[in-house]
Image (cartoon, rainbow, N blue to C red; front, side, top):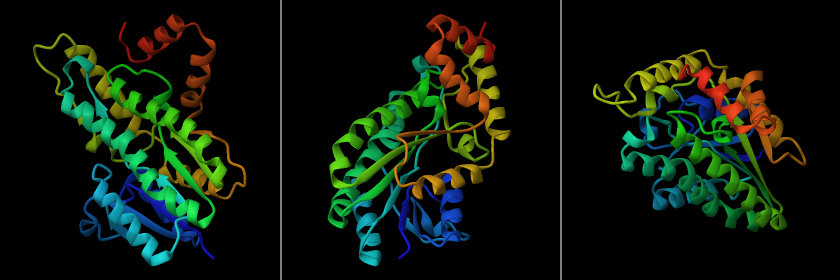
Length: 268
């Protein structure tokens, strides 16, 4: 029997790539979108869901369970980008980022767990970010949301292992997706003390996304994880230097590592 895969945020980018790849491997894939009726070319069914709306989460999961009687793998992929000087970023946008990137995935997991317990197991993969392993200038809120999800899942994983449920974090680096277009950018203000530094960093971040890796690479890694009997807790997927940056943060003195970031983003 084909495993049933449930992917949040599957109408574009990494989520879409994962869904198409797994569908081609004969998994039974369901994705979510806030506006599935707008997506005309999806290779797998899309269910209407907004991770910021608990009623919508419950309805989407109930719909999939009604059709399939199980959910074997949940892939928490839905998320939003956010950039800007933290001082100048509206509190409402900070709250939205945490709601979508942290509280949303937690609520989806909470909604799926009863079914996974009932069926005797399951696997939950959470798409985090290499940015969650370090505080990045002008991306601090995004880094914080992904770091919080990583740590939350480390704890939740230990709580749910007794039910035969696996949890895994998959942290991508820069991938060529439309995330930059959907990202909230705090405006570059003419009278801002951050104007020059933020503007330059913003250009650099967008260049990294445009030259990022093919989302198919993420899809292949996710497939390998799903087929692994005892998966690791953490996976990092990206360019070698992006993954190595995590190692450097672990071994270098704090200020030396900070200087590497300042130089990389041309902030000194």
